[in-house]
Length: 146
Image 1: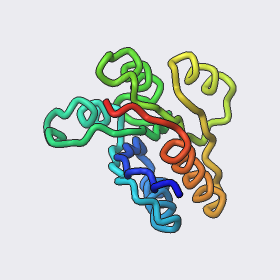
Image 2 (image 1 turned 90 degrees about the vertical axis):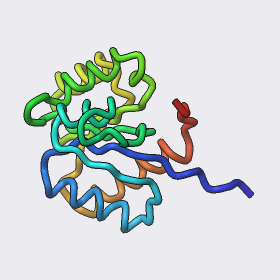
Image 3 (image 1 turned 180 degrees about the vertical axis):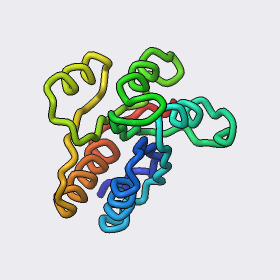
Image 4 (image 1 turned 135 degrees about the horizontal axis):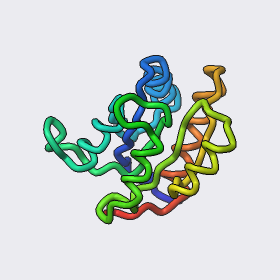
């Protein structure tokens, strides 16, 4: 019998309070044990990832859930910066957005997103998508420790 995977820290980069709430509820609904950290824009996300300012004690996330349409620094720009940074590039990034635009999908993969998932508008479908993301990235995939 295999042991349950160790919990990881997940960084959600999302500016919509409703989507943040739905993600938190999905974690609670499915009893997801991973710690969810939330920042609301790309500037805060970089500060979190680089442990700057108020994020000096922030943990290194094992997974990033990234919305594309963010204030101050949008998700595409942030994704590019993460994947170009030798200290951050190994953190898997799942784009989780409402955009179904082919150019957004293509650009995200060009910037080395690890996955692109369109957010369902239906709450039940959304929480199931969050569960599947968690199940795959935490249970199935082997993540780097650094």
